[in-house]
Image (cartoon, rainbow, N blue to C red; front, side, top):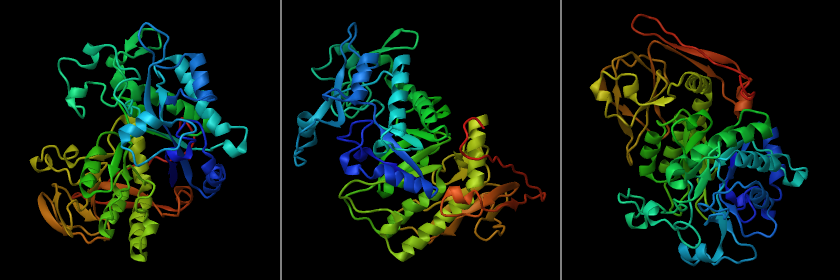
Amino acid sequence: DVQYTDIDYMDRNLDFTLSPRFAGLPALVNKIKSEGMRFIIILDPGISGNETNYPAFDRGVTDDVFVQWPNSKDILYSKVWSFLPNVTINESLPHEEQVENYVSHCAFPDFFRNSTVEWWKREILEVHDNPDPSKSLKFDGLWTDMNEPAAFMNGAMGGCRNNLLNNPPYMPHLGYRSTGLIHKTPCMEGQHYLPDGTPARHFDVHSLYGWSQARPSLEALHGATKERGIVITRSTYPSSGKWVGHWLGDNTAAWDQLHKSIIGTWQEKFLGSLNRGSSKSYPTWLCFSFTSLLLAVQHSFSNNTLLFQRQDPAAWDTKFHQMSRDVLNIRYTLLPYLYTLLYDAHAQGSTVIRPVLHEFVQDRNTWDIDEQFLWGPALLISPVMKLGDRSVMAYFPNARWYDYHTDTDTGFRGRFQNLSAPLEYINLHIRGGYILPWQRPANTTAFSRKNPMGLTVALDDDLLAEGHLYWDDGVRIGT
């Protein structure tokens, strides 16, 4: 139920701005929100330093929020996303030449500093609560990107200054080992300051950059919307899941990416796959395979690029429309169960989407299974993962398993079973001994929540079943 907007909405990709080409966006956001949908904006950490009047940068300089050169107050500049003013971009040039000719110098906020946290919150609040209604975007969540931090060049403007840090004796494979640690990221000698004022080299905190942005972003969101909302981030570190979800980066609409997306979703409680469009023309069955993945993961969204083939469900024929509707109706029906799993993960540290081995660790057959997975302990999902297949070889651990679609006991247990898997069908099985809460679906979750609820009771061999439901208003902070 969420419309995401990528950097196209910004003026020349400058954070906290609105492009004149998107002048109608605030009104559109208000319209879709009145229809029960939500809206999420993207933000990148790089802040342009080439503007004559850019409040976000000017206030950042005043508040001393940017990564600096060591033993200096000079800002460390690199290049990423935002474009120079008053230039016409020649898109026929190679990417490296476009970066050199058209991309502005950017400064990276040092999110370890208390001053940066307050600056970040203020800038985000101004986007939401701009007194000019034509510039106020009433977003419900944040999508943070490029926060490894990523750059379009290696190192910094003018080059890096500490060869040992940037080219250590042992080099992990980062695109090209010959580039050093600065491959598409700022110099390792960049100076950060921890909350207590202790200096820290970028070399020592590079992998923590996305983590350091996580809590400030969620606090900024709560401060602006006064509701729960979500932040999804591209860069994480252990414990990031306390504040943010994780998206897997720019997955393409290609068959091999489907399998990788599913494996990737096992990392955190709220993790999802972005399916980016392609210049290639893909067949209907492949696009539906990605659409059916929407049913199976915690969080998924489709992102396309200008001039690429449309890939949304409405772009296809009526048969595709109906297949997509059927898949999404299953997902919406099961949202109470998924919501409960997400609450359990938040409150107790359990997993939401989990490998089969998590539930059947003593069964060696489950150890190598990465093409099936479970929602919590009870719902087994067996998608088609190979090109052109219309059947799937699924493994059923030693338990009672019911077909989700027919409510019948399959009799499959402790063995592999070849299952029919036509294009419009995804194999779902409920484990005996569990109760799944469900709700009649509607066009959006806002309306689904008002519909009647029910329970699917799947008895085990002893004719017993158990389950629980967590439910709240879905928006209040701290429930």
